[in-house]
Length: 262
Image (tube, rainbow, N blue to C red; front, top):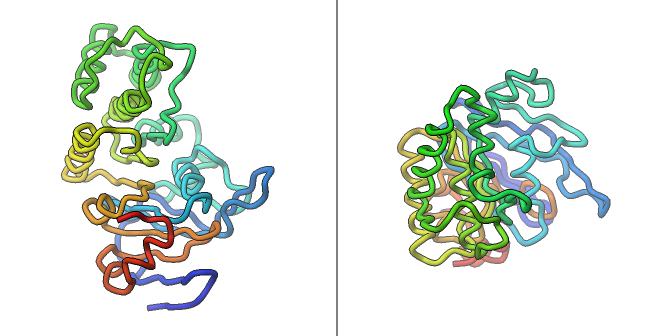
């Protein structure tokens, strides 16, 4: 067990290498025009487990999530999926990775110039080109019902509330039945009933053996769903440990100070 100090506290409480890892970030750094956002981080995500990323606003949580999902290319370091470097994947390998993984953005990220049906249809066209129009329609109907969206699909996102947009974004993530989910503040803007519905879907994905990485400030959600917790402070990994050990070794108030709410 290693315990050291950094700007907050740096602690790794579990032994690496004893289980299969589905995603690995190795010495990853990323900068924007505003400066360095992620600084030399290394994270292992265990297959069929759920990992929560927490930390104060602006610490780099969403950037870490996007790097893990291959949506951003690191300036330094590498990201591996099932041992394969994402940036070295060929087209076929990359398509498999995109089909097996799905991302729910904090701001939903729905195409403004397409209607909801077109937005939901696109992943099916890309990953299942032999699927008929009737089959695509049935699939879209199934996932929208599953997330609780009951309104028209022939309207653009601007017609929807932020909560409704989040439901469509979550439905889009479910379309290809992913084994790997990346969720960024995925219950924000939702009423309690809708949030509970999505949490139950995530629990079902857990039972099916899916691997999940999510960003949240909600301590209740973290306690309910996470197997592991990664705390990011100022672009660095401060804590990386099983949830039970985080709860055991750290005062709840200390965790709340990192940006997590009770």
